[in-house]
Figure 1 (tube, rainbow, N blue to C red):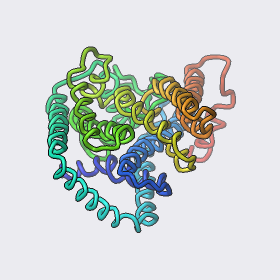
Figure 2: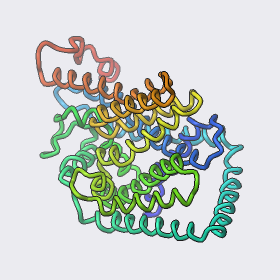
Figure 3: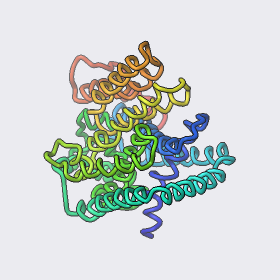
Length: 395
């Protein structure tokens, strides 16, 4: 039973990102191996973006129809709808990309053969790879064994909010101190990561604390180093230089925990939290992906991928709005300087899609919460139980 639950959880970090990433980027003709890393990360952030869109729609429906008593059952609806959509996406990928699935394994075999030939030609490469793998294993061990008994101050909010989402069947509408419904803070209502953690717990059967303190630290640490190695492929052509980069980067993280505001703390201390994922994974990957996209031919699939990454990153925390917005602007300026002219404006619009969506959603949900609290004048004067299509149809 534990194995089945673990597989149910891991599907959302393996087959789902692969399927969605391929559907978004399958038209791109890139012979480099880093396309697989990029496709995976695009699919992962894309799945979080889809969850965020569904979360926003259902949360708005929940609050719009909440009057004297809480409107419950929305988390269950989100769980069912999102699972069905991901299942459909997986089936569409199998059908649409079936001709490329088997050749992928042949390509992997060819690349492994080439790697062994490089190792025979350069023995230091094997040493670099062993050192890099050893450092990663040490971090994975501490992520699994150490975080079980460790907590972060913000867990009073993150972990409890996820538990209340399941217990009350509400989206971001429970008091984290008392557990009572009908209490919502704007910054939690405008981000879906705690609900995503609740979803992981619901589909796998593992407790929220187990998800946060045991499973996610290991899985997200691997995702982080996939993003870092993707960056290395863009910086260095030779694999030995990439391995040296990864060794130095890991040593910097391991010995860089000089404060609770360092990236090391976010990566190795509390990576299950939305702010940590944003800082340690999303920001480095988005910067690398944007600069790589600006340097290549403009493609529609890249535009969709950038928008998906941007929205997926903003699903983690409201802090993403200024961070991703500034990052998108900085990347565009760098691209313009490099090209000595205007870079793709389409990519710029796609890169700020997430921050714009979140900012608008935050503003609207704040207005709605003010109306629910009885403030006057009303932002939505037509809102009322008598005008609600839901109560007209279902009573």
